[in-house]
Length: 106
Length: 116
Image (tube, rainbow over all chains, first blue to last red; front, side):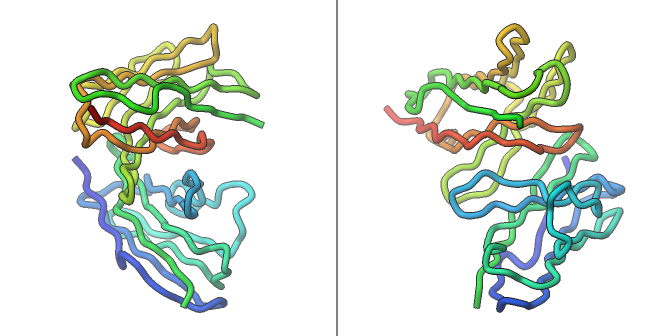
């Protein structure tokens, strides 16, 4: 089974800050990685697929990069509506989610 | 605009079977991958399994012995059966439409509690 880890587990940032989350796979998953946003009380939303492709309609301040085992997700200029938990998810071998990173406002 | 809605009992007794249905509107169920996921209260997301119509389903190895996902194309629905439930199966259950490996359109989720 492929295990996913994320860091940090939580962070606080100010509006306008650049936020970066890392995700690591336990083995090479190529670019078979997605990023989701889950706002409080809502269903998750796919933001980035194939490690770096932005889902239709997602603001360009969100981005992803990486391949192999190490990936990053960035919010270029944090907005209040970005308060959420962010999950990475691999699909190289079935599907596995990372534990999530909680993003709050400072 | 595709819409997915989960339905089924909100309370299930231990050792019994959890059964949920996802009704798809605004699009055909003949294409795409149809996925079930869950999220225990205050915890992260867990993939349960997915099915592509007319093919075999794939399941999370940790749940494989207890899970069945099926599609009813005549009703534009797909279903989840989870047998022998315990309180650890208490979670918000989501259905979703996706491409291979991705869950793109999600239902609102339904909380299912396993309790005597």
